[in-house]
Each structure stands twice: as C-alpha cells, then as structure tokens.
Image 1 (cartoon, rainbow, N blue to C red):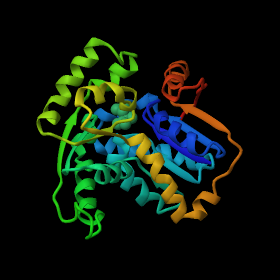
Image 2 (image 1 turned 45 degrees about the vertical axis):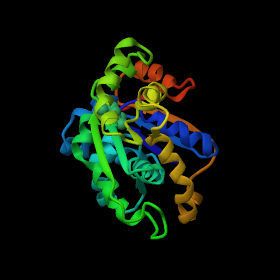
Image 3 (image 1 turned 180 degrees about the horizontal axis):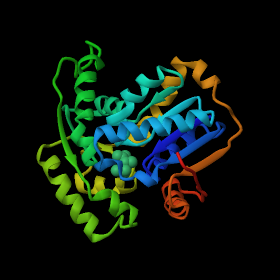
Image 4 (image 1 turned 120 degrees about the vertical axis):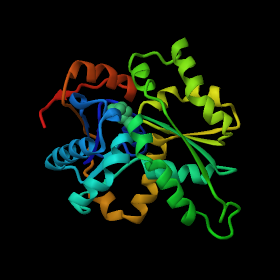
Length: 275
Ligand code: DGL
C-alpha cells in the first residue's frame, strides 16, 4: 500500500496524479487537519508532526510513503528518512519539482511560490542549486551555467483556495501582487511549491503569461515515480494491489470529505482518527 500524508486535504492533488498512473495499487491518505496549516509552524514542530504521521502509516502497513505536503517535504523529509533509514521508503515532492524545473528552464531563471514555511526553509533554493551542478550532462546547452532562484511566499493563497475563491477578484488581485516580483525578475519557469496551487494553475498561468512554464509539484512528483520504480522494481513489486483507497483525518471528517472531494475530483469519505 502507498501512504500519503499532508496537513489536510491539499495532498490529495498529489495522490490524484498517482491514481491516474497506478490505479491498481492500494492507497491510504492521512490528512492532519488538527494541526493545519503546517505552513506557519516551526521546522521543529513540523518534524514532530511528520514523524507521527509516518509512524501511523507504517503501522497501517504502508510500504512506500509520500510526503504530499510541500512544507513537510521542505522541513521534515530528511528528519523522517533518518529515523526510518529506508524502511519503508519515504519520498517528498520537492526534489521532483526541482528536477523538472531544471529540465524545463531556458535561461536559468526559476521562480518558486509556496507557504511561508516552505519559502522560509530555503529548501527549493538549496535543491535547485545542488542539482544544477550535477544535473546537466557536459554536452547539454545549460551545462556549467548558473541558475537564479526567485522565491515568494504566498500565505493568503491556501485560505482563498479552501474558501473556493478560485476565480474571485480578490484571488486575482493577490496573485498579481505575489507574482509581480517574479515577473519583474523575468522567471521563465515557475514552481507551484504548495499542494493547493494546482487548483489555481490556470489563473497563475494567465498572470505569468505564455512564455513562462508553470510546474506543479504534484504532477512532477507523480511523473518522477515511473523512473523511481524502474530503478527500484523491488519497491514497486512490494506495493499491494487491489485498488483500495482509505482516507483518514485527525479532525472534522465532514470538512475533510467536503474539501477532499473537491481536491481529488471524486467523492470521498474521511474517517476521524487520533494519532
Ligand atoms: N500542504 C501545505 C503545503 O503544501 C499547504 C497547507 C498548509 O500550510 O498546511 O505546503
């Protein structure tokens, strides 16, 4: 079984991409609504919450765990990987998004938007710079060229999406405000470094203009898994199949089911649990 966790329902945008590719696997999703939003917690607190979530999913029998939350991937991936030492495999959404941006950028100007936690952690900048030096083959056009990363925290976008205000004038106004510095910096590629932003992708693309490639960390994470499974067939073969889907939440199952259905694009029922 593949286990996903997030601070709430946003991570369902990531699971949705996996479901499209691998509907045959068994899936479990844990939304830690009682502790959301992760984006405004300290790294230490997110580490603690992430470890508890992973522990829960392991006890439920998950053999592959995806941290579907950008903030938790930024703050806590290394922490939980160190605790569990590869048993089970735990992956985040940040590295795949960084790699896809490096593949797609034309001039090396990469923008990143996310919660305060994700942007404040500097994790995207670190990953992009780390991978940039080893990413391109010497024969590739971008080899040896520097990349520039422009980051912008967009704390109001999560509540606006949760309120269903996707096409609202206030959301459009906030998008123009948040994205202006990135447009001025002439980013050619923009990473949507938050679970909620795929729901705003069309609006963001409209503000940024056609020449900017917009990368969803949810899609990037699901695309990267094909390659991961090819390199680790044992992990793929260890995932149980049967197409079951179980949804847990640490608070308000009604709200989880309501918003979760919107994020996943199909009706779901969340069961409340204590962890
Ligand atoms: N899931 C979070 C993320 O992707 C957004 C919501 C929150 O801050 O909890 O960063």
